[in-house]
Each structure stands twice: as structure tokens, then as C-alpha cells.
Length: 324
Image 1 (cartoon, one colour):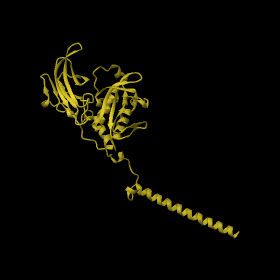
Image 2 (tube, rainbow, N blue to C red):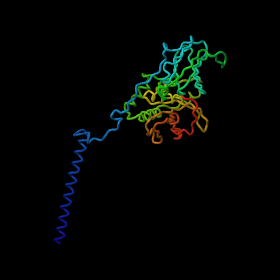
Image 3 (cartoon, rainbow, N blue to C red):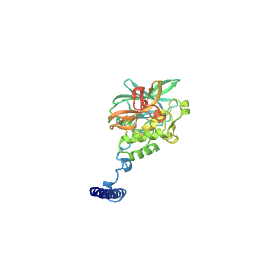
Image 4 (spheres, rainbow, N blue to C red):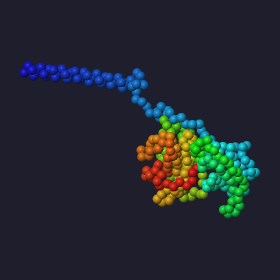
């Protein structure tokens, strides 16, 4: 009995010790919590915020513009072709005529035909075919669908790097430093920890805010060119609008981005989408991983519409035809 009473007494004493230890631990945890919320050394006790909360660490490169330099252009009388910035990945042209005009960019077997304003308004077009000898031709309509050469020049192009044509504005991706879409992209960059964060933010925003305009798709005419700020404002567009807006936002933040036209299986749909380049690897969405040091496919039209994952990142359904 005495041994039993002694064991019971020891057990009671042990429980008191345990309660005291638990009380001390609770007080320590409370002190750590308070110091983490502002008291003491927050660098040790406070939780680490992510880069977006800190203001980000992605340093967007200086804005790259594209302009028509009249004083440096080759003058053919009613047409002027500016090749002063071909190393920066673009050619500029201006022409006047009472007839419809086209502008041809020819390199080897590749030929791009563009509509050209006939009132002297300058146009910017990318040199998407890389280094080599280019022919630039202003063509004037003479009858029905026939055109005759109005003025042409030949130029040897050596790009400062392969990404230059896809880092600047053009007629197909029309924006400036003051564009609303560029300002929004700059806000994304300010909160981003990497280029991948910028891509993910642009992806999320466009998927969430822009819906497909079926009425516009039925009525759009040949030669249509998008206005990224208009797409941003209206929240509606066709595939070309999606691709041009994404390219404007990403290019303005130093992320090389192409607009691609081609066909998508299985219905052989003529369509527009993007390819962007990054040196990083990471995830844009839970299901879409980007590969490092490579061009990655981005189809915002299908993504915004909730299409299957094979239309985002996977190139097996796509046939590229034209690049801008």
C-alpha cells in the first residue's frame, strides 16, 4: 500500500512537471508569434514573403521601339523604304498612290505580302527570316488582282541577335511605350520574380478578361490588323487579337514573342497563336510547363475558352505557316 501511495504521489508530481513544461512552451510560442508580427528581429522570426509581395526582382530590359526614319530612307519618289534599322529586326516603309499598295518582303524562297497604306502612313514589318539577302518591294495595283513594282531595293541583313524581330512593335503587333497594355505589363513585371512570372501573369489576365468575339469572327475582312489596347479595353477579340495582345505585353517586357499563323488539327482550322522564348524553365499553369532555352507555344484563344491541354504548349496539333 505504501508503495502504491508513493507511486501515485510520484505520478501526480510528474503530471505537474509536464503541465509546467507545456505552459512554458505555450508562452515561448506566444512570444515568437508576437515578435513575428512586428516585435523583435523580423528577419529571423517573420515568415518570408514571396517575391511578388516584395516588389519583385525581374529587371525588364529597356523598351525596344521601331520607327520610320524618313531622313535615312531610300527615296523612290512615291515610295520610301527605310533599312537603317535592319540589324534591329525590322524594315519601315511609306508610300503614296491613288491605287491599292502591297509591300513584299522576300528572302530566298520565303515571301511575305503585306497591305500598305497608300496615304504615306509609315508601316513597320519584321525581318522574321533571319540573316541574309532581302528584297523589299512596293507594289501598286494596276488592274483587279494584278500588281506592278513601284519601287524596290535589295539589302543584306545581319541581325544583332535572332530575337530582335520579336522584341519590337510592328503593324501586326502595334504598341508604344505609352500603350495601356504596356503599362499593365509593366505592373506585372514590377511584381514578378522572373520572366516566367511575367508570362504567367499575362496568361492569367488574358484568359480571365478576354472572351472570344464570335460576331467579329464571322464579319472580319482580309487585311484586318488588331489593336492590342482595344482588345484590352473591350475584353473581346478573335484569335489574332489574343495573339497580338499577348505579344505586345510580353515583348514590351523584353520577352521575345512571335505571332504565328497556321493550321490546327483535327479540323484544319486557320488560326493564330504565340511562341515565346525564355532561358528559364517553370510552370505557366498547373498543366503547362515551359522548357528552358527554347521557344514555347502559347495558345491563349484556346486556353481562354477552356480547351484541352494539348492546345497549350504541345505542338503536335499545329502547323506553322507564317511568323510575325
